[in-house]
Image (cartoon, rainbow, N blue to C red; front, top):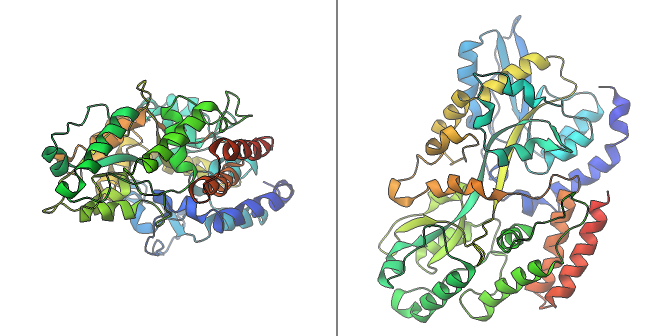
Length: 441
């Protein structure tokens, strides 16, 4: 790709990169890609006449080393030079401007649209993948493919990710004779259960039934979906943030606070680790926990934890957030065929099984056939398979260019409700107007 292609986009890209690196850090640190990891880079070796492919990502090499080793065994003439990059988006944008992109690059939520718009990513023809019977393209969960798509075109392949489910304390539920519905509580059932727990809080030793650790749009989206409203209209040109059903969803969250079943919403910390800590200490009876954090739960005299589906709308509608990381080929790679060969290996059933069986942090199985492998670190009685079953209804915001800016706007505007007590309809109307302007881009 010529340098002039990138000059068209560079100013906007650097602005978005700075937003993500600074104001957007809170939003990106929640997903598996943003978890604190040890530093690392693949070891160097004498490449000789071998073909060298460079792969850049934010993750440490230890995460993917088993895949790199397995690929090397069957492809000894190819070296995958893996580089862990800090300030990832800024680095990729800078490399793009200098025609210095790697052959392969990872994309987390928000990256695909940004990089594809800038011409950084090579388009992938899904029909080529489907025609390879050994690759089993139809084995991917359909929702995971959305994260590699922009404007109807495919620019990568899903690798891993994570989502949320609800953890509850079996001891408390048994003491109060509470039975968890197989498909999860409806909103009304959830509120009734919370009120019963709080009514007996001294008896069971909790402070609250649960809590919501606010981090903006990631809290609001599931309740919107559960109440039957999508984030935008069908062609992603207008948001539904001021829809009456969105207003109703926010007021339901407010009701949980007003009735005293949850404390006032706080920004306790990045992510939901505070919720894990409160479950471990026995101060709450249930909480929304991410897959990659669930291993931090500790059974004790006060906690015997299990997993249940997220609450659903009173009409049964489900919805929860999913993050998926993908791997892509750069548009400037001079070894696209070899890069595709490695990418197919890494995302094949064999490659992803190697990843899932060797990771120290749980990753969601982007392939249906690997469902059990992705939760094999959990005891059967924990019912961790719900994390994968939930992929039937998990998703994310539409893949439009201004996702990061919309997330920032939502966090800023929703603070007016949670911390300033402003009118819900007014705030959501202002938020919708701001997001609609961003959608016009």
